[in-house]
Image (cartoon, rainbow, N blue to C red; front, top):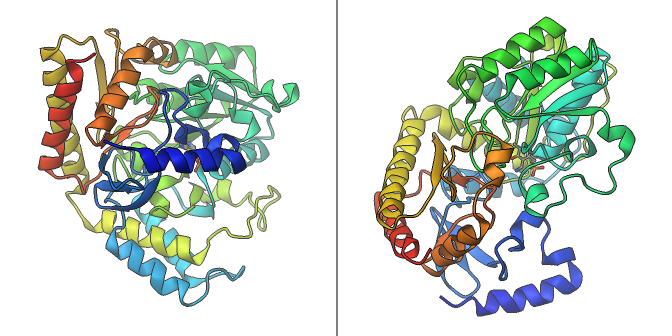
Amino acid sequence: MLYQRSSQLFAEAIKVIPGGVNSPVRAFKAVGGTPVFIKEAKGAYLYDEDDNRLIDYINSWGPMILGHAYEPVVDAVIERAKKGTSFGTPTALETKIAALAVNMVPNIDKIRFVNSGTEACMSAIRLARGYTKRDKIIKFAGCYHGHSDSFLIQAGSGAVTFGTPNSPGVTQGTAQDTLLANYNDLDNVAALFKANPNGIAAIIIEPVAGNMGCIPPAEGFLKGLRQLCDANGTLLIFDEVMTGFRLAKGGTQELFDVKADIVTFGKVIGGGLPVGAFAGRNEIMDYLAPLGSVYQAGTLSGNPLAMAAGFEMLKALNDDITVYERLAQKTAYLEQGIREKLNAANVVYTINRIGSMISVHFDATPVTDFKTAANGDNATFKKFFHGLLEEGVYIAPSAYETWFITDALTYDDLDYTIQAVGKVAKTL
Ligand code: PMP
């Protein structure tokens, strides 16, 4: 395939945009080459500026769970836009989507909308600190919670792809309030509690990690965290920016039957528009301004276009009782196909999957935390990535990312992808 026009556009972009991209993971820094510039998208496909059609396994990094340009969302946005794009006053639409989200997700009474997952997580820890009157938080190595200062300590996703896990610009003072633990390691977390009695406001975790590849929690891990939080007066924050409305209607609380105190959302909840949200029970959420003293605000928060898109997306997922089952079946089918092709070519690999999240790691050891995720063979990943791109299959340009499966994918698309993996596997 030719990517000539994308290359030209990238050359123009780097003159006026740092690195040519508005978010680092879009650059092909980890895999080499130039990013593909997309002109439009529909269903399971991206159409780029060179008129290549690509089967999309990134799906805007998660939001497009029902495919690109999903009609109810697009129609709602167009209709809303004609009536004004922002008012800075409350709208009925905000209550409508809030009520739907509260109804779909267990253990939450109230939800506040923001503009990104970063904002949601940043606000969630401020709320947890205000509520508990404590300063420290525990985060897990390889988990990504957006780019606010407290989280850029051994973060996953782009922050690890580029080898700058502790970003310059984050002060020592901020960093010292973030305690690091290993994913799936309860003893490690227990030791942090012991060393910081009455000091830990919250544990924040991706209940299924998706920013070091896809790593499901070990049996009992989330329940163990819940117990440790209860025993220490600490809040448990589930960062469901990736998993919320993707793995189940009620997210991972429903899936693993574990209660979180605060849940953060992004991606799917905005149907492809810039939306984040955080939610919890009344007792905690009422600490927020204007009711309480924990301040949080936003000029464009609850924006009518974003709320219209999000509402249509959540409604579609809520109304379709088999959607999560279908997504999981498609992903399992893909997993099986990829396994067969990689086995046939004697490639060493590990595949992690849960629901519609899947990642392929080029290493034989099970991938259960950041350390094992980092063991993967990057040279092989690069070849795999570029080989698939040549075949018109678009996966994330980094070994630390999850593939996001969309319901718009047909079994023909999946078969094509499996064949492409077979071809590429022979070259690895
Ligand atoms: N939390 C998680 C789990 C994420 O995956 C991401 C983004 N990939 C974020 C937070 C940050 O969201 P955003 O990019 O919308 O700021």
